[in-house]
Amino acid sequence: MSFRPALGALSPDQPVASDLAEGFVSHVVQWAAQVGAPADSLAVLAAAARQVSLAIQNGHVCAQVDDLATLFPAQSVAELSRCLLASGMVALAGESHVPPRILPPILPLVLDQGRRLYLHRYFDYERRLAANLRQRAARSPLAHNDDLRRQLDRLFADNARRLGDRPDWQKIAAALAWRGKLTIISGGPGTGKTTTVVALLACLLAENHKLRVALAAPTGKAAARMLDALRKRAGSLSPALQALLPRESHTVHRLLGVTPDPGRFRYHADNPLPIDALIVDEASMLDLALACRLCEAVPPDARLVLLGDKDQLAAVEAGAVFAEISAYPTLTATCIAELSALTSTPAARICLPIAITPTATPTSTPTPLADCVVWFSESHRFASSSGIGRLAANINAGRGGEACAWLATSDDSSVGWLADGSADLAPTTRQAMLDGYRPYLETLARVDLVTQRDQVFAAFDRFRVLCALRETARGVHAINRLLGQHAQHFTGDSAAAESHSPWYPGRPVMVLRNDYVLKLFNGDVGICLPDEAGHLMVWFPEQDAGFRPVAPIRLPEHDSAFAMTVHKSQGSEFESVLLLLPEKTSRVLTRELFYTGVTRASKRVRVVGSQEVLVSACANRTWRHSGLIARLGEAAG
Ligand SMILES: Nc1ncnc2c1ncn2[C@@H]1O[C@H](COP(=O)(O)OP(=O)(O)OP(=O)(O)O)[C@@H](O)[C@H]1O
Image (cartoon, rainbow, N blue to C red):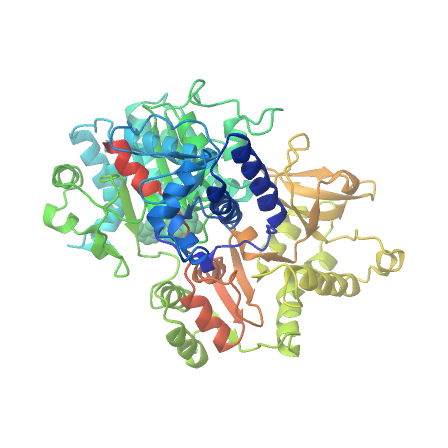
């Protein structure tokens, strides 16, 4: 994937620590000097080490030697590469005589043939992930089966009636995932990914009642949503099949089994998960390291299905694995013929996956993951002509001007725009936020907070303020302060206000650090409510209904959650969203962030920002330095 250094995909939740980079630079340079590196290589080495370290903190997997050239205009890129190798701190990877599965000597940095410069650890993750994916993709596909064809016809009969002659990509994806061991399904919100997985599981479980299926997602919220959606979509299956579906879902960390040893999981390549199939939702949130560990922990013969939205924000940590591996859907002629037989679809209608999405960019380097990737583009939640669908499509296509013109003139009530670009919030923006939470605050005043917690949570989940930034008057902290004061005022909790206690009934909080003892994870949201004895506790929803209390004093690092960053909102969905963009353009504000924020709303989204900021967000694409596609090519060699 190509890259512009200026467009790092910073998360506002992750501070940039240049101290880390400087520490690394000094360590590497000292080491190089000790082993007798030529003096003239040290300055280049220092610059390269700094660049790689900062790149990783900005979400890139590697840096590009070409970008060093601006610092050393007198030297060519080839000279700079030679200089780095001469320092003794940089290993060269991928020379034609080096088999790609052999790691170069353990040195702090690795340089590949594409002049990408890596920290050794990240090169290793990339290499291992690529080899794992490629091996899965190459597993012998299952042969055509008449029972399966009949079952797919039954499961997708409604689609057949609706679509007529058009191909049914849900059915094709289910057949593809049945046939192979690795399937990557990318689609926007409500495009039927979970429905397709239910059909796939129905086919697999009908064949083998004992199939061990696991469900996972990067966050607790996403995992819970996935299980809930799966149960709802399974309503059309026979009770016997419904009973065989998984009853729980896990965060990826919990699935892999956290150990007291940081960074080590219980399940890995040498102790794989005891499963036959794994479905991962919201896979775009997987960073390179976690994706590598997850894939390695899945037994080689198990089925792996990754669901996500390639247009959403990438992971907070380094890598954009899902966007990269799903970027180029290609089907071979053999696969098309088999899918045609399995789905009763004429082959000619299956053969142009690029046509599924008009924004697809043909590539000169197609992914080696042919026959593994499918895109869904038709949303069943909102039509492409509807407010949110149209806004999302304009953002994705980078048509900021059109998005604004349409927002300004549309009378579609599912989208709205407050053209407020002031550094402080305009009164209309404040009022829109207060109005958004009014039903929640009224619910707090109306229901019994001890016996009707479910109603409190349901009311809270209907509306959310999403911010691009944490700081500034339009950031999460300031908005949470404002809404917290309003909530205390509204519910008449003057006692808490006077005692300066941060705890009051109805205060929503988001956990910001994993606590494996308390089983609370970064991103979990709870609400402060009294228990039977009248003590304020923070209640967290449990997967199988019910709520778990945690004493406020025991909570790991947390923050109020009336407003959250778009990054933290990934994997969640709310009926109504107010998306607060910063007053001026920022490198955090990317097309992916804008799209992710808008598509968290299922019914209504209101965007707050100036026209200049909206247009610039649409134009600002996230590019991340990575060599995953190159590694996949090598792994195939
Ligand atoms: N082929 C279809 N025809 C009509 N409705 C459908 C179809 N497929 C899915 N739906 C409906 O569309 C909604 C979204 O489906 P689903 O949850 O499967 O999508 P998703 O892509 O998993 O969504 P999310 O982005 O929330 O994860 C559901 O109400 C589902 O019943």
